[in-house]
Amino acid sequence: QTHVPQHNNTLHQHNTTPQEATMAMAMKMNVRAPRRAMPVRRAAVKTARPSVATNAKKSVGDLKKADLEGKVAMVRCDLNVPVDGSTITDDTRIRAAIPTLEYLVDNGAKVVVMSHFGRPKDGPEDKFRLTPVGEALKAKMSCTVTKADDCIGDEVKAAVDAMENGSVLLLENTRFYKEETKNDPAFAEKLASVADLFVNDAFGTAHRAHASTEGVTKFLSPSVAGFLLQKELDYLDGAVSEPKRPFCAIVGGSKVSSKIGVIESLMEKVDKIVIGGGMVFTFDKALGKDVGSSLVEDDKVELAKSLMEMAEKKGIKFILPSDVTIADNFAADANVKVVQSGEIPDGWMGLDAGPDSIEMIQKELSECKTVVWNGPMGVFEMDAFAKGTFAIAETLSTLDGITIIGGGDSVAAVEKAGLADKMSHISTGGGASLELLEGKELPGVAALDEA
Image (tube, rainbow, N blue to C red; front, side, top):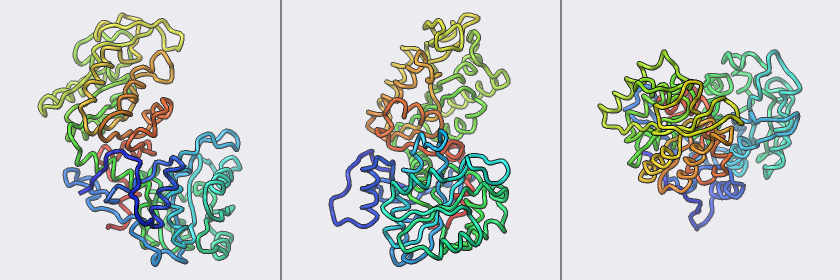
């Protein structure tokens, strides 16, 4: 059974192991690394969700110096960071990869790092080379970091052969080969041929069965989860499967259609569900309310009705905004006013929750012990319609409980509000977070060794 700790930043004061030293360093760098207080690093996946791999996975923390010293550890990271030219504009994913890399380095492994970067169409393109990432890793790691100009072949083999224990080699973009996304076994075997063991720390691509995430596991043993991937599983699966109650899910975003699976899956577990964002108006229309020119998915109105009925049958509190901030145009400088839900005039559209709704939702959240949030409350990119989203972020930042920000726009909102470090867990995945919350099997996780 997975135990997830209350959010805290303290390390136990006793003799420090290499793993604890790595964690301490990660915290100083403000990396959302697995907290040392977490007694179990394995995701206990519950039988209530039969579609999910039903066994806990082996973690890199289970491997000790005797398992790692002098061995070539191939690590799949998600280093697909945003760049402006050759300048990295957000290094979160690089910082999040460091604890696993440093743990392997500290224990004497030769660490070979793989990642994709962007979406190259047809072979190598200079703008998709991992050169800026290599420079960033050099600046952040405590050891020698070199970079190869390919990810397979003689040059890579020679570079690996020349490695010293406790050093890092970054391979070139795996997606320069079409075989990567096709999960071609011959390509996966070439990738794996230089290594002794495999660590998957790329949660953001764990929902894809690619050669560098799933294919290589057929040729390398052990194949284990890195600290970042493990933390994602502990929170997005462990804390959600065995929540401290009351448990509330906040599901926002523009369309019901993209969140159906998440809503249905979470309704098996939550005590309350808060609906926000554009999808509110599909539910309002299902209730027979006037929604003006707000975004509505007409073909999902019946589904919205059935979800509300399902909540009622299960005794789940289904919370929709009671008032709405509306605008006469989808623009930052539009005319804005607040009306009661169901009283939106023609030509006006709802773009955020209103002040009464915000207060009511904050009150509902204040008594919760577990909250998972996926999707904003309004069009937070425009200041006039950001109040609902930022108010939720503010409330969660002070909550006495477990707060899980489940990927995508919610993460951007929490980062923009400057409250990221106040949350228990911020997911690094977009599609992967959604699929895990939906209870789907992630191929990159399923392929790893059982604990």
